[in-house]
Image (cartoon, rainbow, N blue to C red):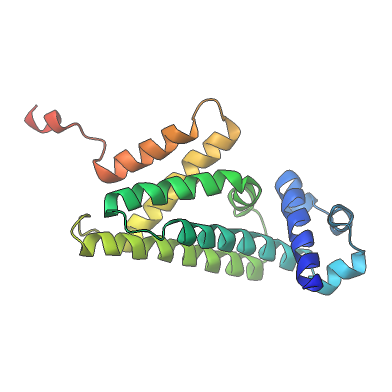
Length: 198
């Protein structure tokens, strides 16, 4: 139990440092100081900065998925369920902004291939999670029969882009507006009904 607590302390500190400084500028020494652990304890738990970085992102995304699953256990109609899903993902993305920023800023950097593989694996699980929900919606007749994987990637892409913009410009894009925009695009689309008669 104590070991897990230390690990969580380290991951919390790493998340803060990586989001502020990026992977390459972050130092293991400062992560140890912020986590209030000895440097030896840090390396005992994570043998390299790359491994710590991968663990930080994967733990963050797994926490988000767990929370989404818990919040969406309900008997609501599918469309209410879909809006709840979007709301949940957006709010968690923003409240876990440290992990979100790390993911968005560092995936194009020169990070070890093994680290990228681990992060891409948990990202794939997240997309699969969304895919399963969309598949259920199609089976129940609520959604059009589109390729589930592409649809899930489109949903995640919209959330990534709009939430990243919110984190940079909070006043310009309120959270409720982001949720409503994504839900409207997914549920009724961008084209006005009367456009088909024009």
